[in-house]
Image (tube, rainbow, N blue to C red):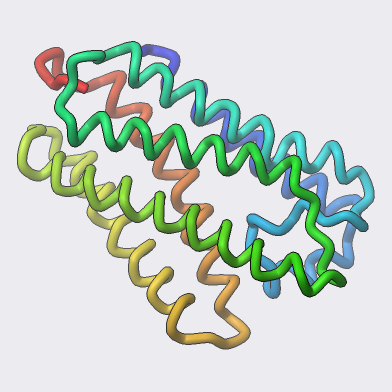
Length: 203
């Protein structure tokens, strides 16, 4: 699994590149980003929408799927709890990839509930991954560094998600976007951990 970190770094890079393309060719989008989650940036009215969807959703989601498959192939006899994490990572990649094929129109009120539902599902998956791995790293693995990183990420994502769900104001989607962005960054740390982990750590 020596390609884990490179796969996830490329996923993060394409995600950020998609944002750059979006803002560069759609400068007015900056005014709307704070009012939209990252799950809704496949806007029908955008210039170069297909290119943005490719780099912002399809490629990053596909690479997360590749990483999850690496996890499955690397340790077929892992603990049940870890198998659940692998499935959840796979689901997060699939959901992010699918967003690239679901253009969103802010002028269609019927699409907004669907968008909110997909966003909540994605954040729930992210929180489950972080919570399970925080417990696992603390109880089983000796690598304190990845435990500390995961614990901090879990606290931040949980806090931001809680505020987004129960404190509705103009900063709601900003907090949501910070949670999603942190997940992509944290995945790189997770990929590095799997490259450097001890041989007896079964996944």
